[in-house]
Length: 234
Image (cartoon, rainbow, N blue to C red; front, side):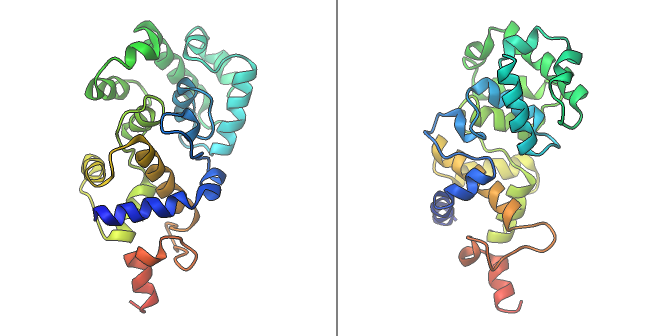
């Protein structure tokens, strides 16, 4: 399956324009631009909270407004009243809840010395700290670790599970099982990890739909168990 995953990454590399349409920018391995073209690791953290239950297109517009208002740093957000921040998040679902969460997260990271101090912790310590924050679940924590802090971990989204289950017939028992298995199979590198996540999410959104997958058009059709079954009348 390791070779299968490598072939998967090759397909994803050839999908750069489609990835970009879905908010993923293939860049240098450590660049925050992978995450929707944001300009800094702090913007990754901010937008990772905002994008929960909200379309990326809306979050992207909000990030532009936050930059214009110089509210795109954790230090600036930590000094805000949550209500004032919520006013700047117009269009984001649950904006008052997210404003409260963002202020708390920004204060916690700022008080410990910012991202520089957070980066000095080992992977387990970083993950535990992120998971202790209100509104940060496993997928958000791993997304922040990978795209903001450049730590080798894989966020497991519903798209990841759907695509890998259909393509390879693999079915993990829980979130950690999926994450550890994929980390074992993927070549160890920030570029490969980020490309994999961007690719499976894009395939899940564009072709591997929950109801009726568009197998004939999917770029993974030649290596997908489900697509082959459908082609053979299974």
